[in-house]
Image (cartoon, rainbow, N blue to C red):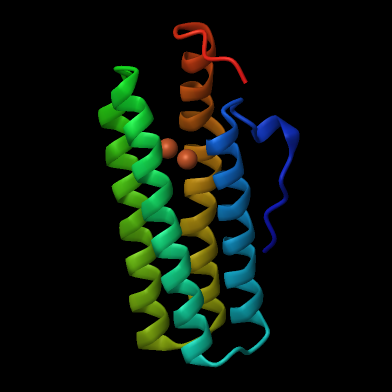
Length: 138
Ligand SMILES: [Fe+2]
Ligand SMILES: [Fe+2]
């Protein structure tokens, strides 16, 4: 699995767009390492980075959402927590079962669910809100 960045994914707020691009790189790097037989230590280290980066990203978005009194703030927080939980599940499954076809499918499905729903829908809604309601310009 390789996620591809497209211009249509931009929400129009550069700090968030740059973090989404970085998140995509880290997700791709994680799957590359799993698929290329990286050692368990390497995979766990990459997962640590991915989890930390995800936390920092969610924190930044939530700060901006609070600042502008965003109506879907609670929904965003819940979904951010869902993704953090997915990453913890991925770590647990990987540590318990190693790399199997079923484990990789499980990981990909969890990540794709987040990417397709959260980034492409929820965060884009947030970007529209910033542009339309707050007149935040790029
Ligand atoms: Fe978000
Ligand atoms: Fe986001």
